[in-house]
Length: 399
Image (spheres, rainbow, N blue to C red):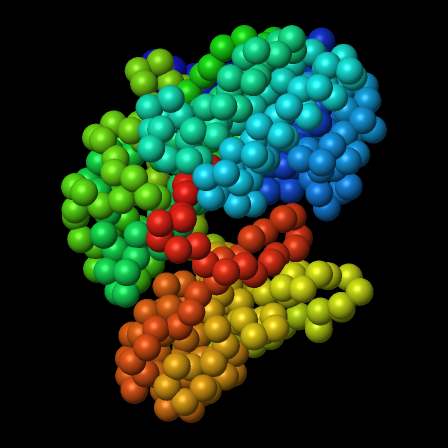
């Protein structure tokens, strides 16, 4: 097994003194959480990097902009993700986008196709997302382009999403199955290392340096953030629609291991969170310009940590860098929550002091009795968009 130290050293050395240090590399999904880190890492190595996304005029699903973006590219790195995780939609996204990338890549003479998949794609087939990732891998392996497939475990950054998906009221019901999460920074280093080298024509797993029981990990994460939700251990709890076996979410013995420990990442993440003393919710941004944005869209910069932005009838909260959204009206007497006070993830209604968790919608204090309707916040580069929350039976996991 590759140690964290060996992985870190190999990542730093990629592109330094290498004859391929100035390749043109196209990063599809280059504006997302991982993509933006990857673009920065590859650029630091001296490569000519193109961050391709719908915002830059490149759409892998429709094929728009691919010919121009891939012209002269030596490597394509696909870290894009489906905007929908329902069975048919997620399968269509990965099959269509991968087919287009491979077709246009072959025409452009791309010599290395790198794709991000997920650990467990071949063994968690009860989950639509994992099935779609397996189909994506199959297309890549059958293509004429030399390739490398990278299967990371779940990111530290998505532990909160896992908790939210398992929340019912003020209870988080999760399995005690093992999980081996990894920092997005470590994944970016691993992907950059592989993208800068020769094709593997195979698959490599990338995982965090530690394994945890999922219930214990969620409990630790919530406790560190003073989140009042109760974690209930349930071996039969569903993980995005399906039961987990003990080792579904952990990597094999040959996985490359990241260097960042979860506690280290958690401390840094909390330290970067602004003080959460009760404060009036502020809308720091300028009004959304209809000509610049579609309905339900907003600028991320308009919602700094500890603030909120009213987008139509939905209020978007930035809780320490994490976006949560709810209906704007209190369920008690329709008070405007965007004018209330925010303390961490708790908003207090300005009318009768009812309190809600802005990430789960749960009632934390009366007189309100009914929870808030919550919404997803989808981020594409500098633009965010609110969307209806998925029903529990529709939720799918993502990397």
